[in-house]
Each structure stands twice: as C-alpha cells, then as structure tokens.
Image (cartoon, rainbow, N blue to C red; front, side, top):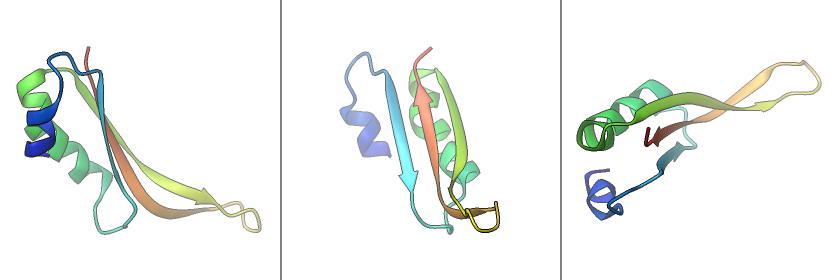
Length: 72
C-alpha cells in the first residue's frame, strides 16, 4: 500500500483494497489504508466483509473483505 499511495494522482478519488481470503479481516484492511493513504491524504475509510448468499439456508458464506478510502 505504500507503493500504491506513492503512485496516486495529485487528486485521487478513491482506493479500493480487496482480499478474497478470510485470513485478512476488514478491520485490518481499514487500518492499512488509514496508516498509508488516509494519514497522508485525509479523506475517510470504510470496510466490510464480502459474503455470498446461501439460498438453501438464507445465510451468508464469508469469502473475504474490502476496504475503501475516499477523498472528502
């Protein structure tokens, strides 16, 4: 993410970080964006889990996470 932050334009709109492994939580990904992009560029960060709906049970199968930084 340090390298990504370095190559952003002078006025970036957003950065999206996705992970399709349950080993990297949404809160960790938010922390990574906050420490690299938000700290330097301000803006705001949000994060959430990604899930696939299970029609047979009505549940959700976790399959990763995403975090998004946006300029304010």
